[in-house]
Amino acid sequence: MEGSQYRLYIGNLEYSTTEDDIRQAFADKGVTLQDVRVIKDKYSGRSKGFGFAEVDSEDTIQAAITAMDGQDLKGRNLRVNKAEERKPRRDNFNSGGPGGPGGSSSRRFDRRF
Image 1 (tube, rainbow, N blue to C red):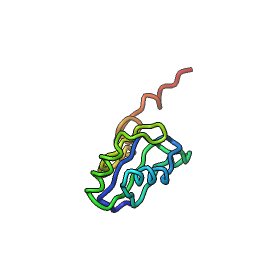
Image 2 (cartoon, rainbow, N blue to C red; image 1 turned 135 degrees about the vertical axis):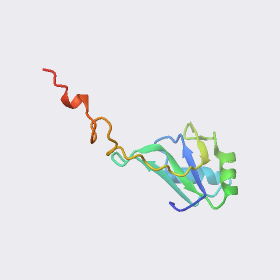
Image 3 (tube, rainbow, N blue to C red; image 1 turned 120 degrees about the vertical axis):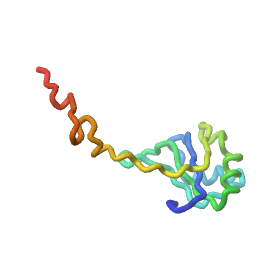
Image 4 (cartoon, rainbow, N blue to C red; image 1 turned 90 degrees about the vertical axis):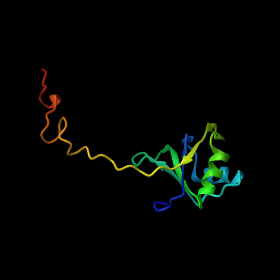
């Protein structure tokens, strides 16, 4: 799914929603999804309440948004949009801010007895 330029963001999912539930809901509206991923917390394995789907064209993206944005799935109104490119994460480990190199943290030196 990483390389596709035709991706949908599907948000406001009920936590028990599966990839098959999403695929079926879109198919019921005439939209075929090539690949679906529900994003899960890496520690608990629980859904984060959103996912992504790959489709075959820009036209299919628009059809999916028109058909499914705001529609009910398991008691929740879906948010369906064209997926944005992921922005690079900021590296906070070497920022020089409080507690980092060159910085100081008042917590580190604040000892109250």
